[in-house]
Length: 464
Ligand SMILES: Cc1cc2nc3c(=O)[nH]c(=O)nc-3n(C[C@H](O)[C@H](O)[C@H](O)COP(=O)(O)OP(=O)(O)OC[C@H]3O[C@@H](n4cnc5c(N)ncnc54)[C@H](O)[C@@H]3O)c2cc1C
Image (tube, rainbow, N blue to C red; front, side, top):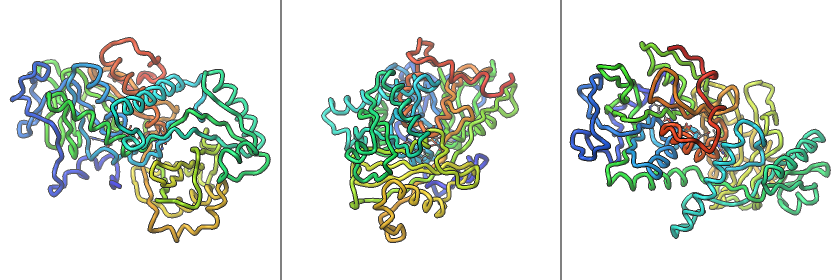
């Protein structure tokens, strides 16, 4: 896990002279022949760093940045560069559990349409992988396991029944399971007689690392025709502005000047707020994006054999993250459990506001393990300490927005700059819908999903 101490360490943390910058598919803009890539006349790039020109420059190679790149490459003729201060999966994406579920999403909420569209696009992508002669479970860790939202208290059970009705009305195959039906569906799950669950048979999960590797591979196919490049270990430090108009025409990284003809998309996860503040420093634009890091721990037990999970499970309290308050308002634990394509048990997860640090906390792992034991009693007979050699901990910083919605759209006062961040615990599931939305917004196309709930204006303080 990359130890990024904080936002202000963006540059210093990655200017290690021993760390070789990793670039893929780039050419100097001066040697390009493709008219799409002609360099723009501008004055403010760093004179000493190599310069390159693309139509779209994307800051952030997490799931959001990489899927936006994929969308531009597949659906347009534009050229794309992705730039990251680290590598893909060094941010929240690398910690993600991988559920692409609708059970805990609420029909009619402001993120519903985006989630539904994304869900459909993930299904289509898995089908496409199959049509290409590949195996989605191998390539993306894709498994259509269905998902269970498990309730234990009378209030939770009432809410689950209403949820099943709403999900069914919204067109999903939702089922309400009594405690007996639940035991048959998922024998390892031992909950009391008063328990029940909402079940969505069509929900799927993926492996974030495999899926990211697959998306990178797809994107890299466009490098040969000069339409794609990656600049990793290249923290973005400033905007490049036109000497004549002052317009933003690219970004300056630690090693490169990257010009953009059409758009700069900031998809820098929980770092987007402080990065934007830094990028607009000493300019007419003041922007405060209230995105902040919400730390999460996940426990992976490799080659788990004590029981098998037929489905993914989540406790009902996950929906509003009130499942298990650890006495400290800023630390919440709710049970999520999945088994991946290679038989690893993955248990989540914690939520915590504690800055930009990503150090592991053993106490939190104990909480996650004990909470899972309340649903899977077989775990109580095992000693977490004895699993030390087969367990791994993942820690990531979810990009949290206080109003619970991602922020996707143009930045007021900065033509050609766009934001795509703030997906908190749903960035994997909402990625493909977000990518489609960003592409439509940049191109000025009508979008399938209403983009107004995600607009920057009115949610992020700005002055220009
Ligand atoms: C424990 C845990 C479990 C989760 N489980 C799920 C799940 O099951 N399903 C789901 O849908 N979501 C899940 N999520 C949420 C999901 O992982 C995130 O919403 C998603 O990964 C956010 O993606 P992103 O691309 O916006 O951010 P990130 O993955 O954080 O990527 C942002 C990138 O920006 C780069 N960057 C930052 N600053 C700069 C700079 N100055 N210059 C260049 N690059 C920069 C970073 O290096 C990073 O690579 C989980 C998250 C956690 C922590």
